[in-house]
Image (cartoon, rainbow, N blue to C red; front, side, top):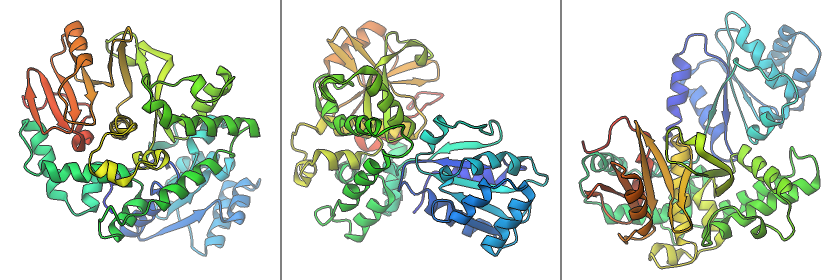
Length: 439
């Protein structure tokens, strides 16, 4: 399965004296599979350790023996001679050992250096709560995300359609396979971007009616189980689960933003903010902050206590809200329709490294997302249908006079009166640009 994360691995492979590479991502996002396949393809000499399953390996890292002796013990354990400058070491589930994380410093400082890859689930939470000396400056950390819609197209052997999206986005020209891509967009809402779910869809002959979302249901249960890890008490895990379960209803509400009362009656700010912070650190959710001024850099104008929350994968959201397949595929109106579209766009912005911000004006207008393209702040409105009516975008444009605006909807590509029409399936194109497409 072709993944954009290969670019990160390629850059790392071609670096001289590369630092250990730590890959962070939610459970089942494909970290282990991709890194293992990469090692097999590009390195003749590599060794794999799973610190969750191999207790002896954890014991080696936690022991007080010298670093050189630890390498010798790891060689004996793997029955593979580990050589600096030659052997690639893949440490999976590294969050299971603090000392393994600390050891990354020594892997980096040895000359010649050891090539080290490491990955794990809940690493964001682990690093947030790391009580010992994290090897700052000795490790390169990258986030891995679910497949975006373009990767979904690649997996389904529709690379030519991906190329057409790129061309139409830049040229502001209508896409001739628009209807087919919109159908695939609706299928993506149901399948999501987790690799195993996509493989299940392919195994069902790409028939969405034959697709079973059992994997997504199981994964949600695994996430809920994980919420008992790296917490200080059972009460904290209860708050975390409560926030996670409340996100779909909050997104579908009129206000859409995070509200205490929609989580649990009598809930305190301290407990809930701690729960949100845990979920954000785990990358199970994404926060989109309200800004009180539309100026660069937007992060300087965040209102940190007012935000919206999105799930890391839209397929998980559609599973949680239990939308019938027919409602999505027939493009019917249903309560969570707008929430799914907005979550989908948020997911693609985050995967492209775009911070999430939104704007609101005296409760009369709201812009879903704000992008920074070069020196410009570009408003992005998301609509689940093809409706062009937009009071909020009109209010924003009258107030700030942006050079460009974007409406993401079910409509085909186009540019009219300064509003760039971007179909929902092209959301992966909404990343930072040095110049405006079409110029």
